[in-house]
Every structure is written in structure tokens, then in C-alpha cells.
Length: 315
Image 1 (tube, rainbow, N blue to C red):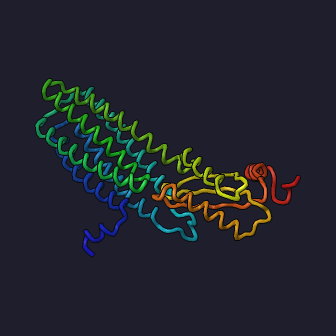
Image 2: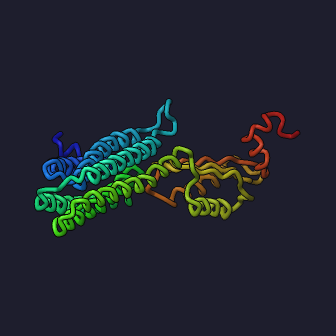
Image 3: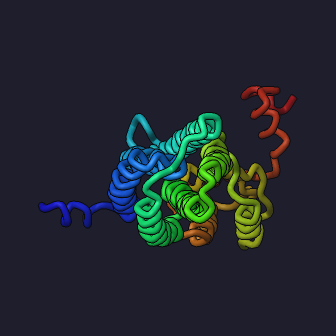
């Protein structure tokens, strides 16, 4: 199997990380050389960001590879949360790069360093903006098709690159036409702050998944409506939802006629499960209904809080 065939065998998500890695590596090498030769903090900041892009995209490739592994005896719910861990790590790396860029910008302001090779730097940044623009379009498309958190994080990351590259281009143009080198450092400072701000959303989303945050309120409402509108369902309670980024997990208690047969209860549950999974076909679903002859939500809450134990529920 040649390299192209092997790449074609990857999932959309893994292919996206390979494309992102190759693109970031190319841009990092070009910008690093020009940044070192010109002394531009803005270009160097962009080069450092591209180097980190490469590292993050490689990490994301292996994170997605692990997340796609099937559940086993040790990881019965799969390894989908690796994506959330990757998002937190990616956001942290982005934050560190932003802090470093701010440091370099401040040092340039203090030392009053000058910028050279403005013409070449301008061409490099225009190339970077063009390439990054098409990469962002590709990543956004894959993110929309797969709803994958890692690809969403990568797309957001490269969007910030697109904005920061545009800022670098503006900074270089201003330096070229005004001769004021401190503009380069000021733009570098602004880029660093913007990069840190953009990382916040990525980190928060990853942490929320690790903390088993519920699905979006409108999705939970739709699930509740499906359950309550199903024929022969007297009610429901203890509806709990979460996601690992790849799969959505739903648990709930169904209140049914106590004289209903197990087969009838099972058929009702199957109807509900099919309707719930149809809400988002891009995700895997794990739906676990529990059958109750009456509404025992208060008892469930007491069990959850450790207030009662088995055998004491009637006290």
C-alpha cells in the first residue's frame, strides 16, 4: 500500500489532521527562516505559532486514532474522551505560545529592535494567509460533517492563525510605509493576547466534556419530548445525558403499566431509542432506558446522594 492509498484508508478526521500537519510544517519552515533573517517579531510570532500547529496536529492525529478504537473489556465506553483531553492540551499549548509572543513583543519594544527584509516578509505572509484560508475551509467542512471536537479545535486554531497572519501583514505594511518599527512589536503583542483569548473556548469545551456536562438544552428538550409523546408511556424521570465528543450517552427511567409484558416494554424502548439516535446521525449513541412501574424519582435522587441504601427504600 502506497502513501496515498494509506491516507485514503484513514477516517475523515485523521485525514484532516494529516493535511493540517503537512500545511503547518511547510508554513513554519518558511516563516521561521524569514523571521530569523528579518528580525520581525510579528513574523517570528507567526512562525512559532505554526511550529506549535504542527505539534498539535500530530498529537491530534494520534488522539483521534485512539478515540476511534472500539470499546473493550477495559474501556467499555470507548476512548472518546481522549478528544477532550487533546482539546485541553491544545488550548494550553496555544496559551503558552501566546504568552511567549507577548514576551518577545515586549522585549522588542524595550530593546528598540529594527525590522529588515520587509519585502520578502510581506510575500511570505501573503502566501501564509492564502494557504491557511483554504486549510480553514477544509477543516470547517470536516468539522461540520463529523462534529468532531478535535477537528473543531483545529479549525478554530487555524482561524486564529488566519486573523493573526492578517495582522502581521498589516503590521509589516505599516512598518514599510511609516518606518516605525515599534508597530511590529505592538501588533505582535496584540496577536499574543488574541491567541490566548481564542484558546479559552477550546480549553473550556474540553473540560466540560471531561466533567460530563449534559448535552445542549435544546437536544435534551427534544429527547424529553420524544419520550413523553411515545404511546403507552405514563411518564419519565431521571433523564441524564453526556457526550465524549464522539458518542452521546442517554439514561432515563420510563414509567409504564406495571402489568405490561417485558416484550411490550422492550418494543416501546426500541421506538424511543430509534427516534433519539435520529436526532444527530453524525454521532454514535448509547441509550439506556430503565423500566419503572411508578414514578420513583425521589428515591433515585436519595440513592444518588447516598441517603438510602438497598433494602431501606421504604423507610
